[in-house]
Image (cartoon, rainbow, N blue to C red; front, top):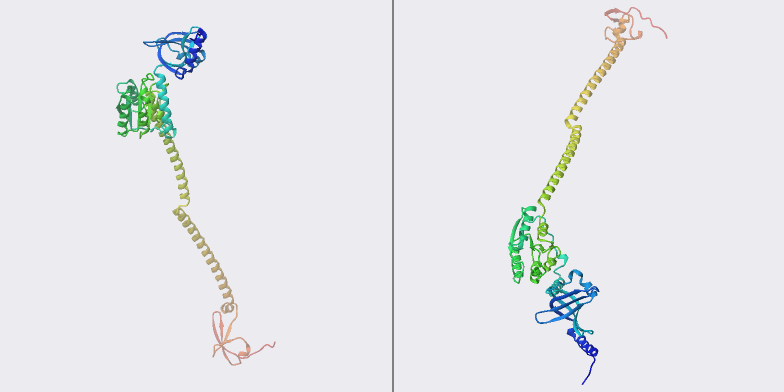
Length: 403
């Protein structure tokens, strides 16, 4: 028989707990009771279910990592992770808690991270595959519950901002076990109806309420969408798997509706601005064109053939006048020269000489001009031509002058 002291027995039992691989790192599901947040910062409470209870302690360092806002209230179902050991002074078995989270949330978060990581590794979240939204969508598809307030909110936004677009609703369940299949069916319906963009949205809710939007099949269906998909699931702080795979994530359903359509008032203002700019450009163009045409007209006027013809015709007239004057002057000069020559010829003519008292002698028989005394003899008949008549005479004597 082995006899142990109380301390030895407690140490033995503690060693058994600490050496057990299950008890060294165990997850315990239970309800919080007898909660006490000690001044030291440590957290003391009891985890219980319908059939059993266990004391638990969470040291200050772990409580600080948990955060004050995350400390559970009495009666909250939690999932605690820690190690089982024995508190020596009281010999009481305790769960030394390292982490603490609301029941269900821990498992769901773990599933969420597993799905998110697997899809990310496959490239479903790559930014390079994200598509831009159409600037002026003609048909907008919405996958949501028609009874939800979020649907009316989206319709109000779409009608106010861009009433030109046609809205096609594909009704589907937003939560519950049947929701993923219903959402996928709604998306496929929209794919088959040639919409330009799709909104998948629902209002806010708890993490569990939004769990359907973490479904892998929905993510793959969105990934295969032929058109851009915008998600508006929950509130701004809520993020689901569909938000990662969608082309655009909006913080709320209303924000999603605002993202997929432009504001018609802004478009109208842009059109007015464009028209004003166009009018100014046209006016400026017309002004510049008019100035250019004016310059061309002036240039054409300067180079007008008729103008040149008129000018040349006037020049011809002037040349003709100059030619006439030159001709007249030349004729006058010629006439004066002729008159001068005629006067000179007249002065040199025999008739003029005769008028000065001279006479011409011709042989009567032959009519030969007698220019020397040797040409006649006494008794020759001669003719004496005066300026006013002719005398017939006979040479009586020839007297020659000796040189």
